[in-house]
Image 1 (cartoon, rainbow, N blue to C red):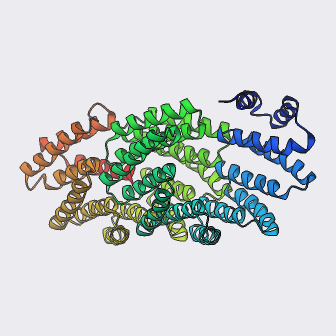
Image 2 (image 1 turned 90 degrees about the vertical axis):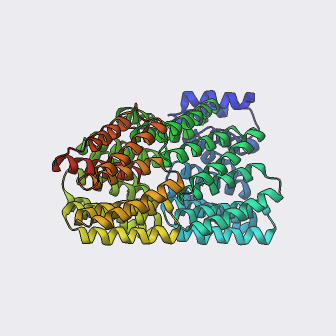
Image 3 (image 1 turned 180 degrees about the vertical axis):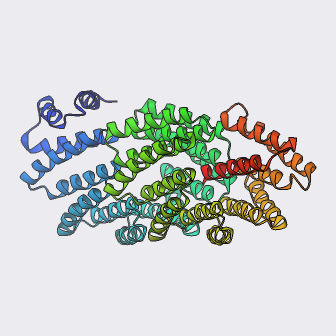
Length: 553
C-alpha cells in the first residue's frame, strides 16, 4: 500500500461517519493547485471505493464534481456521475444508481464519447438487474454490446457477454447463460485476460450448480481458483473459495462448506474487503443453520448485519434481516422470525430489491405455516410467486409452487398440492434443473402417500433418490431415504431398516453426526429402524423431513 493510500484510509477510519470533516481534512492534507483539486478528489474516491468506504467515496466524488463543473471538464464530471452510480449500486440503492448513470449518459451523448456511453448502458443494465427488471437489463446490456462491437472494444464486448450471461442465469435460462459466458470466455482467452477467464469459469460453475451438476460446478470453480492463485488475485481466490463452499452446501456437505467459507473469510479479512467479509458471514450463517446450530447461525448473521450497516449496504442489511428471520423460524421463535422478515421487507421495498422482497414473502409464508395459519401462508407464497413471474425467475417460480403445494397438502387438499408440485416439476425439467426435479419427485411422493397411493409414492421417491445419487446430493438422498423408510415401515420392515441404515451411513459420511441436525437425523433413522411408531410419531417424522427439504429450497 502506497503512502497516499495509507493517509487516506487512516483518515477514513477516523471520519467514516463524518464525510464533511473528512473532505475538509483532505483539502488540508494534500496541497494541489485549484485546477487539480477535482482530479485529487476523483482519485481519493477511487481509493476509498476500492476499500469499501462507500459513503466517503460518494462524498469525495460529489466534491470533485463541483471542481469539474467550475473547470468545465465534462469528461471527468461524467466519470464522477458514473462512479457515484457504482457506489449506489454497491450500497444496494439501484434506483439511485440508475439516476446517476443517466446523468453520465446525457453528458457522454452530448460530447460523442461512445465508449463511456456504452459504459452507462452497462450501468443501467446492472442497475435494472439489481431491481429484478431482467428484461430491461437485457435491453441495456444489448445496447452496450452493440456500441462495444461498433468501436471494436473487445474488453467491453467481453464484459457485456458476461453481464448478459448473469441476467439469463437469474432468469433461469441456463442455456443462454452458458452461451453468453462461453462467448465471454472465448474473448478473454484470445486477449490473454486471465482474470476474465477465471471469472467466466466461476460464472459457468454457478450455472452448472443451479442445473444440479455439482461435480462440473466444482471442477469449474477449481479451474477459476487455479488461475486466481497463479495471477495472485487474492480477492478472486476468496470468491472461488466462497463458491466452492456454496457448491458443497448444495451437496449437503455443510462441514466442507464451512471449511471453504472460512478460507474465503480469512482472505477477505487480510485484504480488508468488508463487503466480501459480510457476504461470507452470511454464508457461514446459512451453513450452521443447516447443521442445526441456529444460535451460531444467528451470531454470523448478526456479524454480517453489523458490517452491512457500517458500510451503508442497504441491500446487504435487508438480506441479513431475512436470514435472521429464517434462523429464528428454525429455532421455533416464529413471531421473532416474522419481525425480522418484515424489517427486511421494508428495506427491500424501499430500494426496489424485488428478489429479496420475494424471498421475504416465502419466509413469512414459512413462519405462518409453522404457526398453523395455512391460509395466510398461502397468501404470502402467492405474493412471492407473482414477483417471480413478473421478473421472469423460472427457478424461483418453481420453488414457490413447491411451497404452495406443501401448504395445500397440510390443509388436506392433496389434489391441489399435486397440481402445484407438477407445475414445479414441469419448470424444473424445462430449465434443466436436476436438483429442483428431484425435490419435486420427493414432494409428490409425500402427496401420493397422503392420498394412500403407496405405489405412486414409492415410484416418486425412487425417481427422486435416483437423481440425488446421480448429482451427488447426499443431504437430499438422506431425506429421501428417511421418507422411503417411513413409507414402507408397515409393509416391509426390512426395507424400512435398510433405507434408514443407508441414511445413517450418509450422515456419518458427510461428517454431520455430531451437529444438532445430524443427531436429529440419526435419532429419526433409529426410530424408523425400531419399527414401533405411533401414528402421531409418524406424522411428526414426516413433518420434520418436510422441514429439512424446505430449509434447502
